[in-house]
Image (cartoon, rainbow, N blue to C red; front, side):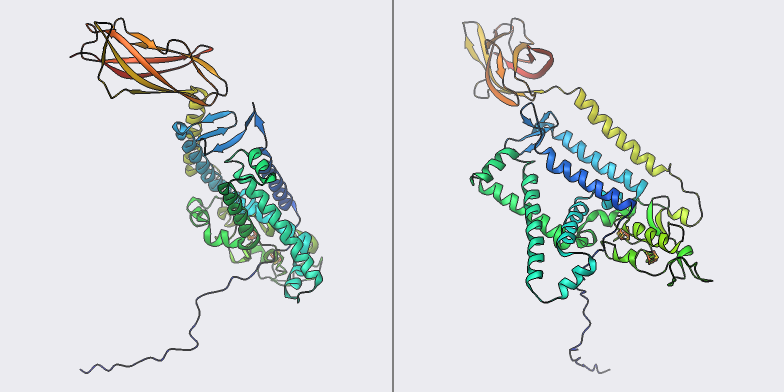
Length: 463
Ligand code: SF4
Ligand code: SF4
C-alpha cells in the first residue's frame, strides 16, 4: 500500500486560545455587607499601619529583626533557637483558615485577604478621582484632555503614595521603622532597605491597582484548593434559582408575571462583582464571597417590592431543602487540631525560660595539669539573655568530687536581648577525675531564681 504524503497549508485564520483580560469596572455598592467590609478594611489597615509604630519598654512591639536575627513579638523576644514558635504560629494560622473556610466558606477572601483589602482602598481612590462606574468607563474611552490628565494623574499620585507608604510600613516590620523613617528623611537609607521598600511598593501598586481579580483567579493557590474544604453545609453565596427564574424585566412595585421569577435581569449583581462573574450561573471558584452581589440584589428587591435574599448566604443543603448541619466531623477535626496547636504554643510560651546556655568544650586539649595533682578542662559558653531585662547569672558545675569553677569568678552580666561569650575553666583532683566524666553546668539568674538552665558536658582527666 502506497502511503500518500499530503501537505496542509497553514491556516491564516487559526483560532486563538488566548483571551485578553477585560478591564472590570466594579460598580459602587451600599448595604449591610458593604458596611461590614468597609469597617473590616479600616480596622485591618489601621492595625497594619499603626502597630509598626507602637513600642513596648523601648522596643518595637512587632519586629522581625532579620539583621539582628531576633523576632520581637508583643513583648517576647524570639531567637533563631525559638523557630519552633514561628512554625507553630504558621500552623495555627493555616488551621484557622481551614476551620473558618469549612464553616463559612471564603469569608477570609471577601473581607480580610490583603489583596481584597488593598484593592478595595485602591477602588475607593479610583472612585474619588475618576467618578462612578459609568463615569470611569466613559473617561477611559474618551480622548486625552485636561480633565482626563488631571483625574488620571491625581489617581496615580494617590495610588503611588499609598503603595509607597505600604512598602515602607511592610519593611518597617523587618527593620526598626523609626530608623528607616529617619533614614528616608535624611536620605541616608541603605541600598537594601530602598530596594525592599520599592519592591513592596511596586507589588502593592501592581496587585491592587492593575492585577486585582487576576491575582485571585490565576495566582492565588488558596482559590484552587479551598474547594477541598467545602462540603454541602459550608456557607456560600448563592443565587436562588428556583425563586429567581425565569428572569425578566418588570415595573417597580409590580408583582412578577405568571411563570416569572423574582430576578428582573438588571445585571446589577454582575456590575458590582469585583471579579466580574455572574453568580446566577452557580458557584464559581472566582467568587471571593465579598457579598457585594447580595447588597446589590437586596436593594433591587426592596425597590421592586419583593423579599430580600434572592442572592444570599446559604448552604447547598439549605438550597436543596435539607437541614444544614453546623457540627460536622471535619469541623471537629480542624477544631481539635487548632486547639491542640494553640494549647501547645500557649503552654510552651507560659513556661518558657528566657535564657539559653550553649556549652562548647575546648577541643585543643584533653586536659591540662595544674597545681601538681589537679587537672583542668576549658570550655566556652554562650549565655543568651532572651529577656527584656538585664540579668546577673551565676554559673555552677557539678559531677565530680571537689570540682571547682575557676573562671568566671563572679557573676555574668548580660544586657536584655544580648549574648555573652564566656571562657570557663574547671579544675578537679586528678585522682577523682580519671577517665571521662559527665558533668552538669547550671546557670541561674540571681535576680530571678526561676530563670535557670542546665547543660550537660564532659570532663576529661588522665586515663
Ligand atoms: S441583582 Fe438580583 S434582580 Fe438584578 S440581575 Fe442580579 S439577581 Fe437578578
Ligand atoms: S459573585 Fe458576589 S460574592 Fe462572589 S465575588 Fe462576585 S460580588 Fe462577590
